[in-house]
Length: 189
Image (cartoon, rainbow, N blue to C red; front, side):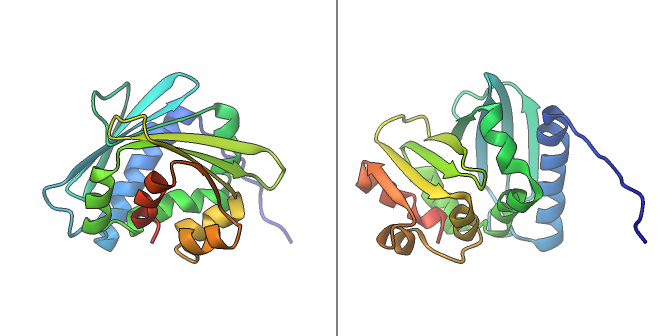
């Protein structure tokens, strides 16, 4: 016996402007994950196909979103619609929900000091590659590029593996400024 099939569809604006900030805020409230982030503010601009979405997290307790740009975001992330599609399937979306769980004062402090651009090339299970560019604190230099499979990215976000071990084992390839790449390590350990 099988139940009814429910076909849900959401447009990108609904996901980014309504569902994601609400889910993050509820998660923070239920888990207390951001409890040591009082007095902090972090922001991100997500640019997809030229359209910009601005996110702000305040005091580790609330996340808000709106269309548009911010003047000095903590991170500016750019990707195409084709690149985001494989990342938002249920198997991969967990990576986004792991982010609030790992909010800690030391990660906030590390993030606020990072200056440069990181470009991630994630090889999806279908062989395609999703490219995600992240500019931290307004600085596009130095720059490093990271190549890894989506499976290894899931392990990295879940803290089941660390970037140094993955690099040494050939699961993570880094080109560009290795010193800058090392400054990102505290975000994943």
